Amino acid sequence: MDLIEREKPAYVVNFAAQSMVAESWKNPDQWFMTNVVSTVRFHDRLRHCKFLEKYVHVTTPEVYGSTSGSIDENAPFNPSTPYAVSRAAGDMSLKTFFTAYKFPVVFTRAANVFGPGQQLYRIIPKTILFIKLGRKLQLHGGGHSERSFIHMRDVSDATMRIMSQGTRGETYHISTSRIISVRDLVQFICDRMGAKFEDCVDIVGERLGKDAAYTLDSTKLRSQLGWQDQVSLEKGIDETIAWVEQWLGDLKQQPFDYIHKS
Image 1: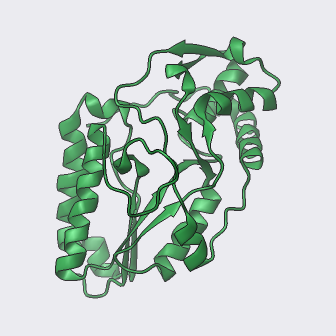
Image 2 (image 1 turned 120 degrees about the vertical axis):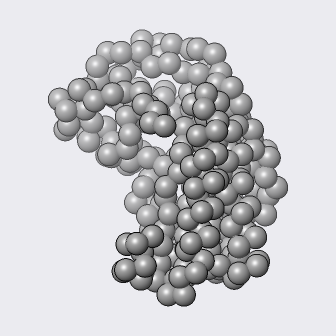
């Protein structure tokens, strides 16, 4: 807060959160401390900053739970994991701040983001890296859950538009219309890299509370702010493969799994 009060930014975009769905079951109190208690403390300080024009709260479709059919930004919350509950609580708190104090918040909820430079424990870079190293990827639940995967450049463009043009108090979905199962995504990457799916994957049990699908309707962002996704899944995957190949010597020395820091 000292930095914010000294620099007096007109816009604050908050990407910070304790993420990782499966791990949130192990230490749920830590997820709530970060995503609810600490976040609300931050907002309560920030609401007194008269110079603030817009606060962009980057949240998650996990708050909806598993979706059926395409949903818009008015869909009810139905979180199914400690992580999702903690994010829903933070979002609901901000809604009260907007109503009570006219706090200048806008919310973004994006589909699964990917691209070069992503953490290696995420599904796309991990699949590519394991294929290059001849290691088998554990595919939880057979990979039947469905997601939209969106390139970081498209998410960045959307976030900038929402920050500068978005209506205070509103939520905007950032998503492509292309839905793919995790299994088909891994198969797609295998095909792209000339590898056999059966040689690259071990099927293991499903994660606790795993949502079957997130299908976000991004019509609002497209129609009101003129946004369009530009990077196809094919192009984005190829970029990420090239990044892994370029930095393979360094990447293979890094941890491949999430390391929790309390």
